[in-house]
Amino acid sequence: MNHSTLSHKVVGTGAHESAPRIGVIGGGQLARMMQEAAIALGIRLDCLVEASDGSAGQVIVDSSVGAADDVEAVTEIAHRCDVMTVEHEHVPDELLTALEIYCPVYPSAQSLQYAQDKLLMRKKMDEISMPNPRFFHVKSLEDVEDALQELGGTGVAKTPRDGYDGKGVRIIESANDVHEWLEKAENGLLLEEKVPFVMEVSQLVARRPSGEIRSWPLVQSIQQDGVCFQTIAPAPVDNVLIDQARFIGEKIAHELEVVGVLAVEMFCVEDDEGDTSFIINELAMRPHNTGHWTIDGARTSQFEQHLRAVLDLPLGQTDMNCDVSVMVNVLGSELEDPRQVYSHVMKLCPEAKIHMYGKAVKPGRKLGHVTVCSDSVEHAHTLAQQAASILRGETKEG
Image 1 (cartoon, rainbow, N blue to C red):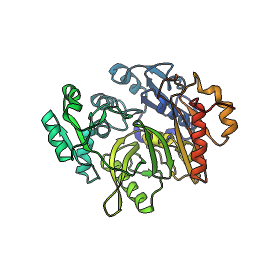
Image 2: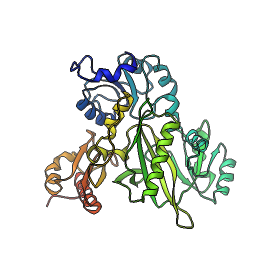
Image 3: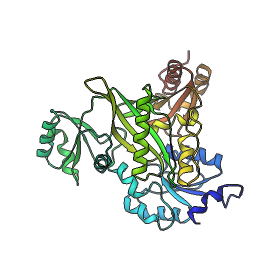
Image 4: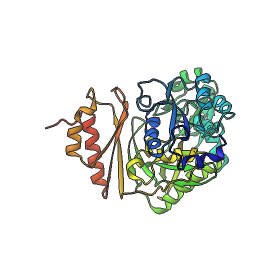
């Protein structure tokens, strides 16, 4: 099917066979939540999952088991889909490029490389005049020592590829701290300055192939052991910073020709005069943990918007449908199955919206999230924390 006809295919067919079909590489909770949005729109997802009983495999009818680098499995899905997308970055560039002979792939390999490789991303941000920390490409112990001297003795070492949720990131004060990383690194490491930030924020935008872009409100993100633990929408910053964050997100989406959802994670920093600005931390080109609040707190969720964008359909409104939305992740649990305390959560926190991912309990694992929409940050924060605490087994029923 010609991609330009996709928007006409959605409207008024009612036939299962003629529903738009989106291939998704990856079977985690992001694909699972894409399915919720796809059902409402009458869109079919065809998902390559890591396990049939995994988060997405449980709920997506058209799913097959395979690895993200399985050329045969991925190509088979592309043959029967109108467009392909990803729910994580760990897909070989050459495979994504090869799929383009069968159907459009969004984000493209050309765009996704900047989310896959932090060193490429840093160089590109400099090229398009986006706010970067000082950084160095280090390939030897001598390079690391020289860079640390430039950075005042402390730096943040990162593996350019395959790091996420705090993995592949280490604060160092000596080259010996990354000796084993350097031995395994084919193209060296990224060494950045340790940014003294006052807040972490995330700007989500969505872009379609035609160039239309929409941005959600800037959110504050709070980390726990390198993993997003909580988001507060909107972020408690002034309008000047809100406009600045939107400009950064939309310019990156435009310059990198991103199609779908883009998350720009940033540090909020203050200079000696007390003026505040942003420094970019990382990029993600897919729905993102800091955007989960949009399911309940925005007129269009990031998951619906991602599907609209990759099909080149008009994007939905991104304004909030409440004053404040607080999302708290459920990271691990003392309970064998957190669902056993649903009654307790719902009784004490009736405003809380529970989203569980169908995962077995493991320490620190993202099992789900809770969102509370309110007219008060304090009220939303208290209820969301309380609900998540019960699901983690930390607050017992009295």
